[in-house]
Amino acid sequence: MPLNIPESSLERLVIVGAGFGGFTLAHKLQNSKYQIVLLDKNNYHQFQPLFYQVAMAGLEPSSICFPLRKSFQSNPNFFVRNAEVEEILIDEKKVKTNFGTIRYDKLVLAQGAKTNYYNNKQFETYTIPLKSISEALYLRNKILEDLEKALMIKGDEDISPLLDIVIIGGGPTGVEIAGALAELKKHVLPRDYPDLAIHKMDIHIIQGADRLLPSMSVQSSHRALKDLQNLGVNVSLGKRVQSIQDGQIQLQDGSTLEAFKIIWAAGISPQHIPGLKNECYHENGRIIADRFHTVKGLHDVFVIGDMSYVTTDKFPNGLPQVAPVALQQANHLSKILKGKKLSPFEYFDKGQLATIGRHKAVVDIGSFHSSGIFAWLSWLFVHIYYLIGVRNKLIVLFNWFWSYVFYDQALRLIIRPFTINKSNKS
Image (cartoon, rainbow, N blue to C red; front, top):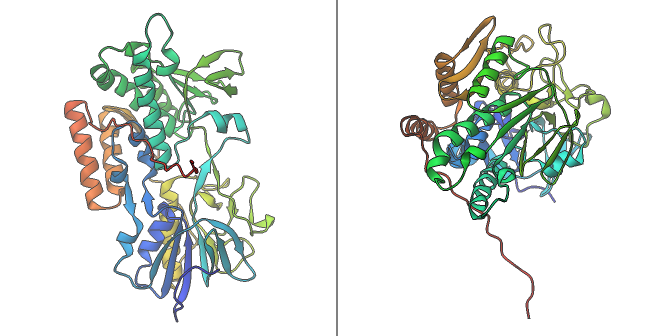
């Protein structure tokens, strides 16, 4: 069954994925020579760098999401379909989805990455990822629900497992989550729960590498470690998780931790799409492409973002899987699809940022390294700049200003999904 897309005399461009790369490409090709179909399982674009702030009840979900149709509603040749891709039928030039098939003249794959559990079912079963708004809301609910449960416990029973939080992974996501949790514990929870022993809450980061933020400079790593330790976060470096089960974390050195909330921030892996030949994939799972974004061995099929494996002189092991790469690739590919003659793609690294807490952040720009309030203000500016929509920018800016002045946000709500019991009762 084909998807309900009207035929047109225009070439049909199908874009799979509405993340940074897919959304930017679609936006830049508006009112072009193509009929554009944007496929995504959600009807909104998500600003992934701020998922953790939704999980920490610092931002509303709607303030970091943008409805896809709102951006393209004035273009009669643009169509959004909520569907998940099941297979690419290369010979037929069709995309098979869970709602039917759609033909294409040109196809762009931009589905991004998923959480990497390193083929360990225990890790997948017993940890909480943070790769979507729904996962961020789940984590927020879990934190608040466990606080409420801890209030109900009387006597000498240990409430630490309900309060403690373990973060596996010390990259930017893990560091930012830990910093946000530490500030929540210090400034907000004592006022919300004055009759609860919040001081018993321990926040742990377990990092397999010998330093935090391994993709950043040594100076930034050391500063992040110092800032987190000053906030009361327990940082374990050079340690790996051996097993996880029912709140019990066993490390390879024999030590153990107990917590009912274990956050997985230990890496990503590219999405896999059935239908592409094995020769299209690198051994790391990413799709091999040239510097004009064409998938190896194929015509009219392109790939950008985290799924893409492109090597350059500066990046012989492939471009980093970060948002700026996807944004720059989308801009470059949009010009190619408009018929412009361009030189091969070259990624311009504008630097890396990570925030730890109030007035605490680190920034690397080439050989320049900074930390403290300058880095923190830089982080704020960059994230506001790249948010989609004026409304979202204003809401996030207001929320951050309010939190800065009053050390508070009134977003600590437990919102559970409603389900209908359809069982037949007689």
